[in-house]
Amino acid sequence: MSELPTLPPFRKILTATAGAWLTAAALLFGAILPAEYGLDPLGTGRLLGLLALGQAQPIATEDGEYRVDQTELSLYPAEWVEYFYRLDEGGNMLFTWTATGPVTYNFHASPDGAPAGYAESFDAQDLQEGHGTYTAPFSGIHGWYWENTGTEEITISLTTAGFYTAAQEGRARAAGRKPLTDIRGNRLPVDP
Amino acid sequence: MGDVSISKLIVSCVIFTLFVALPVSTAYAHPMEGTNAGFVQSVDGPAPGPFLYLGAKHMVTGYDHLLFLVGVIFFLYRLKDVVLYVSLFTLGHSLTLLIGVLADVSVNAYVIDAIIGLSVVYKGFENINGFEHVFNITPNTRVAVLVFGLFHGLGLATKLQEFMVSDNGLVANILSFNVGVEIGQILALVGVVALLGYWRTRPSFTSYSFATNTALMVGGFLLAGIQIVDFVLFS
Image (cartoon, rainbow over all chains, first blue to last red; front, top):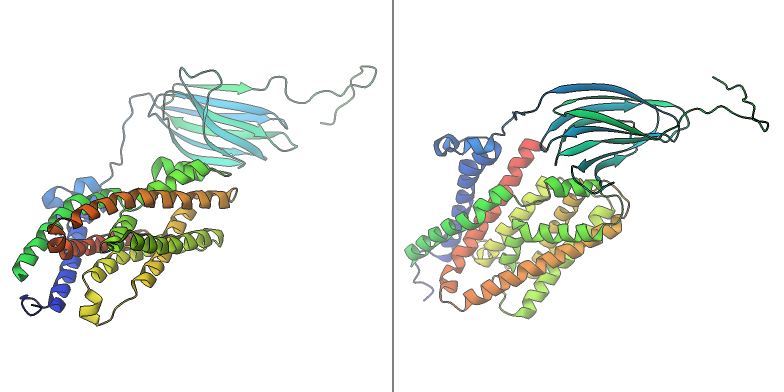
């Protein structure tokens, strides 16, 4: 009974293994490389129209108006500021900011029509700079909260470009340097 | 009979290609991308729920792990054996997942994933008795499943390390991920065991088992090939 098969087990197994290897190689080079990596070593990508799948579309156009914004925000110790842009869903913004001293920041956004105080946070760290791009996941206001965590007055320089329609700033009021007052209510001279 | 086997083999390969191999190329083997990755990067502290989910998702949607499990239990007829082999696999991958992340062992993810792909090839080859007939050796299948479990765990560890930024809550998060992996594995196994259990009662199981394991090798070679391409292009 074991002598009956036309292919002995040894040959059959080698044929199957080689066949498996060749099938995988054919799929990889013939279909996956063109479709997923945009490479076309066998020319099958062009032939089957798979190449288009592997080539990322590098340009996305926007309907809104292109705007640029450059601002300097100064913060006394423990003071905070919020700086937002109004972006529609899918709107893009390119940003770069640096602080002259230690800050903690939180990039977050509030969708239009959300309950009061609702915000989604996307990035919160203690870094002195940030650079990147942002795509609004929903229409609303999108921006930073910065708080001066050091002991000196600092300045944050923010530059953005994108398809936002407005910018707005929110701050803790009445922050800053206060005159010293003695026990009789007289103001004392302050070091510059 | 040889001709019949070859034609069956081709049919199986075509079916396999349509249902398994092509989705692999679009989904890849490791779907922790996009929003999930963004979330994991932002985690600072213990987050058992999300890591449990990610572990389970990784297992259920990871073709490499699934195909390997199909190969492992293909010829295991008794539930006792399924439990034994799956436990060995679990022991292996849990060990390297925990040690890998805790000791900060960094291995190239593409190399590890290529080895995991080849583990699928190995299992298919073992299932068609390749080692007995071609190399005249009988591998210890239990040791093999344990050793490949170690590699699968290293793959999981590498993947988790790529995304975890914070050491805060690290142990809780790896443990959650690991428990998630086991939950995902059980979910996947229930499906695979049920399907194989039904298929074994049909006459087609015996006639197609050789072809199916050959198709498993195709899948393994393909997974390994994709990782090698990634390694060449992106490493």
